[in-house]
Image (tube, rainbow, N blue to C red; front, side, top):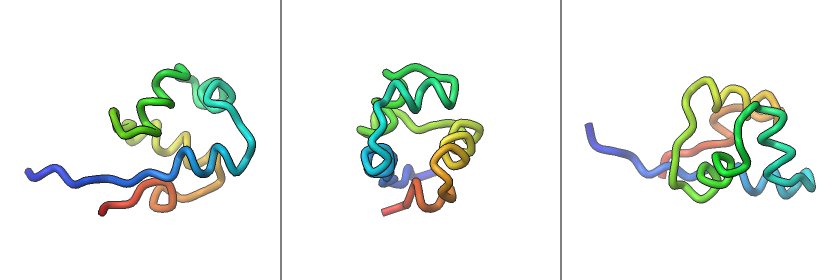
Length: 68
């Protein structure tokens, strides 16, 4: 399978809500470092985590992540 480049909008939504990575990480039960890795594209969240983030931000998974 060919990996597809994924664009994520996590940082944009977090900053629009005036939140810190630690705020998000506490709400979705992970570490601030993990949130940082998601935001810069060094790590992709699991489906479960993508759904948690989607619920937290009140956005669809498609709004959070897009394939280039």
